[in-house]
Length: 445
Ligand code: SF4
Ligand code: SF4
Image (tube, rainbow, N blue to C red; front, side, top):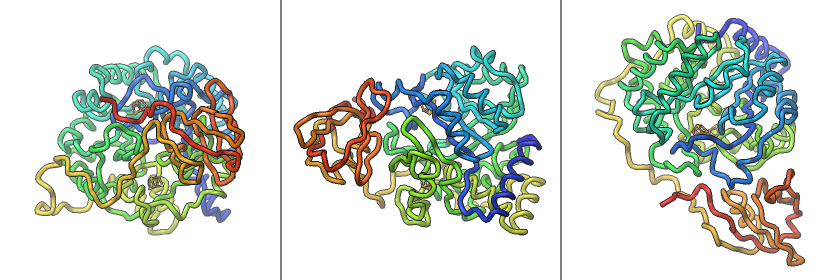
């Protein structure tokens, strides 16, 4: 069993309660990001490109626990940046566990072994160790040699001390089905409780824009991996129906409200991957986000190729509780493991060589440092989307420089260097916008 029965029972009870209450949108996992800084710079990461004064910021213990209290999700995930860099991570973890929430602490494991003493093994805590493949693939994905060995050593140390450990793996278009299957075998041999897998999302700000799996190739890839003879021994720490979805067996639409993300910027709209503004409270996130604009069925090109767990895993979990047929599906999948649609050999590409990036979707070009324009909804959006500081010139000639955290119809929130809270500026007072700081997401020569 890849998830303890107590956790399954907690989640099942929670879901049944939501159904009985007739709730249309409810969270399953809170994605809590206490900080964005990290001790790695992975090529596929879109989370760490911020000016240094933003990367130095972090949520306090009280901020984190207030978010946990505001969001009724029975599970919490702490992704990155690297949570173990937070000086109060011990208190954050203890507070979440005291609330009897099941917590996945995601880590690249560089600091895990030396920080294990900060934590006590409990069924409520799992370390979710970032491993993107065997040594060669993982070290390449994280852009640093030796990190695979560090992660493997930390997994062994955590398991030896009785901690729950899972791996979390992002797969890109250069992944090889045979090597991925070997990696899953290796992870199982390390004694991890389960594997968590997801195709990568093509973050606009990630340095590597060429190696993300498109939807049909994701399906192809997972069919090829999951139809291997040894696949039955792999335990996934995810709904088996989500694994089947990755292999094209189900057609779920995204439910982005199911994994709300809270960070130093606030409650992220609409999901952990896209940044289209921030709400000040969880309730505001639920009520003010235009949910119909997201998910592949909305026609939003940013969602077209997305099959990432934060949008779809809850759809798979809800499927199991939404009808007798769903219940039969999940019971069948729990007994037999994920079922993969039959492979038709002639339909399968001979190799998963990287394909040219689709030209169907227009690529928005981000204006560069020095770009300047009169204030308008468009220019303020450019400043919001920019991963560097902007200078706003006000109607009285005053110039304010900082990171644009949010841009609404009426107000812009600007974080000036060193200020604990963003300054809220009425839009009608802003006369001019200049991208003045270094773009931290721009490719380096
Ligand atoms: S993917 Fe994770 S480990 Fe890599 S740079 Fe981003 S936050 Fe750090
Ligand atoms: S499809 Fe993906 S990118 Fe779009 S809202 Fe859902 S999780 Fe976010």
